[in-house]
Length: 228
Image (cartoon, rainbow, N blue to C red):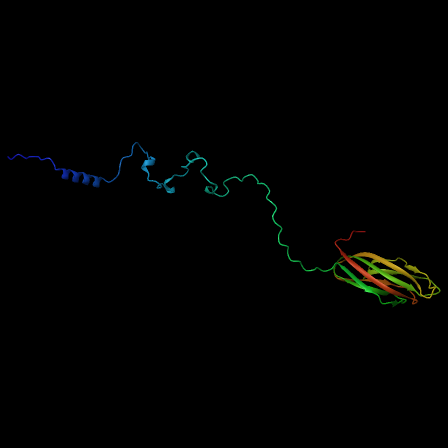
């Protein structure tokens, strides 16, 4: 029986065998300890959000002073203290002038002499829109009777509503110098018109021996009318 002689492997054969073993076993290495991963075991910037369990990061894990306001959901941070009042801003550009509104003062004037008549006479009328109005009427009356004085009743009226009157009337002395004796009257009243209407100054001299020299009515719109 022939003896089998064992030869020492050549160096090249040994290197080839080691390389084959490493290739077949992969690059996995054993970690020290049980369930232990150290910073050196993780490639930089490789831990993702999905790798962290819920509530895994606590206050103790966050470095003080590193979180910013933008890191928090809106409404999570309490509001800070009220700041100091800021400087006054520059004046804005003036706006355009608005249109001129309707006047709240109205006036009607009659400067044409009117002879007296026995019955009721309208000296001047004024048209007013709906609203509250303070009305003033004036007139100059002339008595041409050379023998008797005359009493002339006058009133400020809207339809059946009397705003003001002279009671029994104003007494005007008889004419003595050829020009007639005169008297000036003023009536003032207020009225609330739910719709547009006419206010008139009316007189009833009861004689034809006289005339009205001039008369006018002025109305001012007001916000409210006091009772009484």
